[in-house]
Image 1 (cartoon, rainbow, N blue to C red):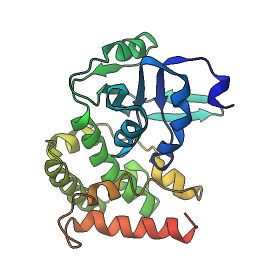
Image 2 (image 1 turned 135 degrees about the vertical axis):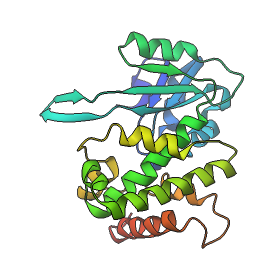
Image 3 (image 1 turned 60 degrees about the horizontal axis):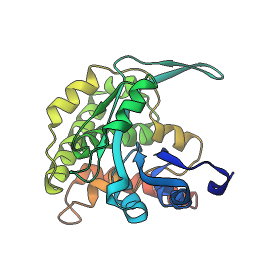
Image 4 (image 1 turned 60 degrees about the vertical axis):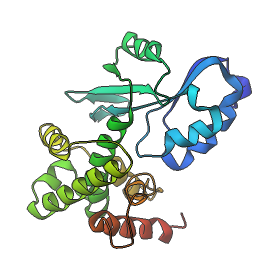
Length: 239
């Protein structure tokens, strides 16, 4: 199916892998005037890519914290404490109607005036957990049972806090860590799933996005090490 086969829409939700974000450009043909393109993807940089395509006033950004367990083919059980948060990329634009639609659909959606702190907080979790899981093959519960990996993940989380500050966004590592550890399950992070399946991983949008705010090639060393290892895996597969 191509965009010209679709009806015009007021809302387009982008859920593709970060390295494919620019490929949604043909959807521009079906977006109505006053419509919104909402990214709920992992990583940093997706909203900026969409702004280049659709314009800042049409782009919304958010995060999804929905844990799930596959019970059987086509049967998924939602984990506890699930929510999503979204808001406009341009600060003086209102997009509350989008969160209202998501709420009516049964999703626990929060509207926020500025989604950037939420994106960076989610990035901290992904940079800590997804990368370490992808490199070790451990699920979330196994990571937390290993003191060496817990120390590594904490170091990465603090590096993300530094990078966020350089980007002009304030996040609290201690708060992020407390919330993550309070809801740990034996789920397999998406980057580990991609690695196990031999698919391209979101290396540039997660640890790579953090390194975009490094001062030099020795800065943010824990993030830098995992980036180098995971990027090498992707390159070895021709990605």
